[in-house]
Length: 153
Image (tube, rainbow, N blue to C red):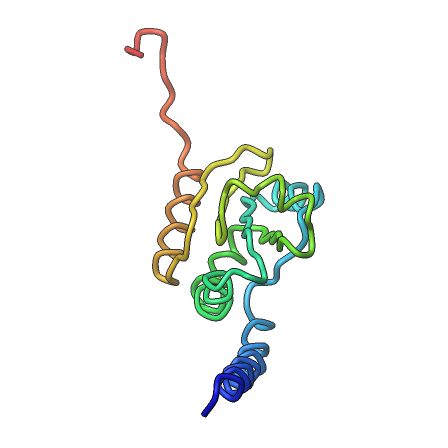
């Protein structure tokens, strides 16, 4: 088999894989575009904003699409505690440039007021994402102890 035939076979396998994963991607996290409305929604619902930085060329972004973002527990945790926002480089070049230094994939979590709470680069397995989502939510839910003037700094 020549190089041309091997490339055709690879393309066919890729297209078969793409067709197979499309239904799964559609049933995962209900992403929305980056907007002020997402932060208003988070504030109104007492949620945080989860930002996924992705790109079509990014193999690990695609892997997260069919693993992490399809995991039922990850989807549940996001639905209960987060407003999910996604920036895809090819769809939003200006925003992609703004976050260029973060690499792909990258996940960021913001408070509803826009404060960045967490930034994590690279592929996250479903279980790791579950832990991350739970930990950040718990940290933001627990009020800091009240300090008095006599407390040491």
